[in-house]
Image (cartoon, rainbow, N blue to C red; front, top):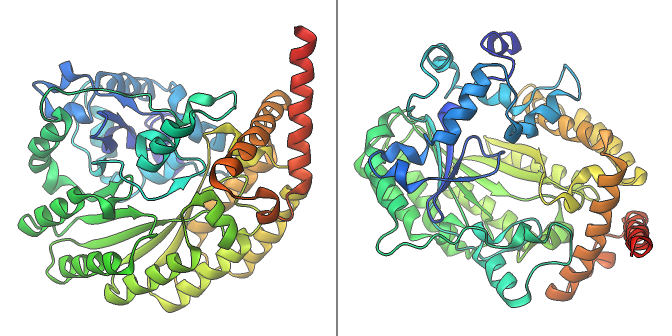
Length: 448
């Protein structure tokens, strides 16, 4: 796998050509989903709807990859690859997936500044959301935006993380949405994955518009996916389960995938994803899969410092779902931003918990996705654990721990939650964060 990809270039990644996430509300794009979003210039979009994906910035980054240069925006994968030669970063996993592998030779031989049709399209129509997750930000969540307008930024060094940084105003209709509906028919039959994100897509009218588009324009090679927090009334969940089942039965699509977001178990999960009811989350999963049994369920975990304590219990629930339904898997990535919630600032006692988690995973290893954890799932989880063990620089650790202390204090104040009672075994970590806060204050006072 690695030889196939690195034969083209040691920094080549097909996702930069074939995978795109487009925020139509603010007019931003990125390929893949790990790098920061960048604005789609209206001057580029005016006569070329494909500039929703093929921006000049992205073309320059593709040229870097073809030349063997590591683009800075792709550090998510470089950090993983530099841990060990055994590690499979998403650069490998994405480039050798079904939506990219057949195109590698074509991509490597075409001019770097060519416009390319994506095979994996993810789109955000709006940011309406009913949750206010600890690590989320205002540009993709109306709940976070409301909180920030009411309380302002958190007292941390990276105070801009949760603020709205894009305020593009349009005199008439949104030009990005108009361009999208012009562009979609041109690329649709070549798409292999079409995914809606948010916000909460089940609360967006545009999701139904897409479903109606799929009914009128069948694509038997298409995997249609929706990201959801599944923290919604069961009636709404059941309505979309029926719609997905209809698409499948009538062969409008090849597969339907439901990506459900959860980062740990029970009360801890509810603390991270404020507004989540973990029991309702599980009930909605069961209800959806019973109505639409051919749906593939992917549990999306953004592993952060608050995920560690009860993560094994979440894995036990995942195993139970695997036993009951035919296609359930867990997909895990590490949280990169904000830095004060990264899991690699963990104290030694929390790092030791990873050993127990790894043991549990190994005890439930399976050759497929149905009976236990497959090699694919285990590799993705274990590479995150290895990244945590590597840690970070002393200075970065101290700043992020200090910010964690300030963030959690303000978070509890705003949401009437209690970190200390929710995370019983994180006292040592909290003390370490308090100490980091004091030492940084002492440094500032000395400089003053």
